Length: 230
Image (tube, rainbow, N blue to C red; front, side, top):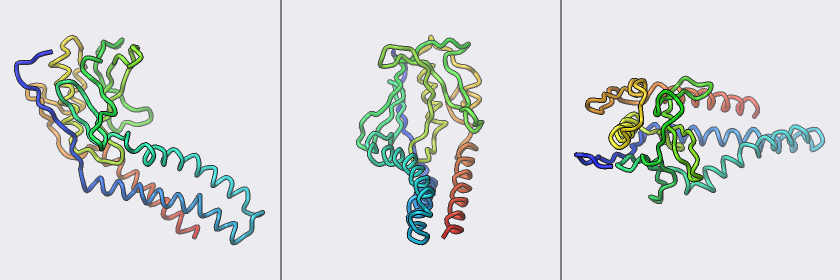
């Protein structure tokens, strides 16, 4: 794999203000959920008695365990394994944690031809038409070929240059893996000019705004429910 020019590395950049908003929303939702389903049943037992609130309390605490345990396990216990930065360079797509360790990667050498008409194409998540994801076929650690969907997002962070990251990764595929066919629709989906490899649009995508709006609506609903129950 050689090129006549250096392949410039690019890293993800974060929209600081929107990331603060996202984390604040997550915190409000988490606290509100705890008030409703954890402290709420306990307060009900205190006010109405153990026998009257036994079954509502068991249901509330059961729901809490199903949601809080995975959330705590993912965001707190395993936080060192969470991706903190996305890097695209001459080797492929790399995800680094806060300790600058690679926690996930998709190398150009791992890419394989697919059974579709094109080897690289976009797909829409089930039940959502917000933003297409890039799908590739890779050779897994178990030496098996499997499809992989690439989402340039980070946990509890709003990535500002997602389209640019897609453009650089696709540029790398076209440069280093000329044996693979890229669906032309991919470039239109991410507004990529294949002559300059620049992205024609800037700012947060429609999908990003819709996710933020959905989070605001859910937060408002939960806060209203907490207010009514207290």
